[in-house]
Length: 182
Image: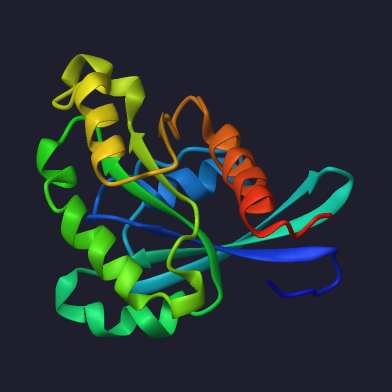
């Protein structure tokens, strides 16, 4: 939590395998557009999204973690001060969720001791490609429950389905978890 010209800034980390739609999700959230030519960058990308929750002006500082496990030693550096997280996978690519346990373990190990139980969401992207689905909602809910995600969403960066809802839900969950706004 940091105050910078708003009532509060919350740091959100978005992580998962490459090519699952992390950058597209953030572009849909912030720029309200979809670009199918999005190219992944190295390490991190940081974007800001302003929200109003319970009459408080909140800035979500969204850190998109874009690297694989060969660079996991960077996690503790990038995760400092994290208030919430989103593990994203591609519903049309079963292998994009196959490392969920390793991602969650690495993510939680990278958090400071006072942040080990922050709200985490499981998000399946590319729901507009439902005809190509490789992971059912039922199985995704089982995975969500098994790894103690706070909630499970599916979204489409292309259509905008659930894009804002995910971040508003996470911000409100952080609010309840941290009691920042009371």
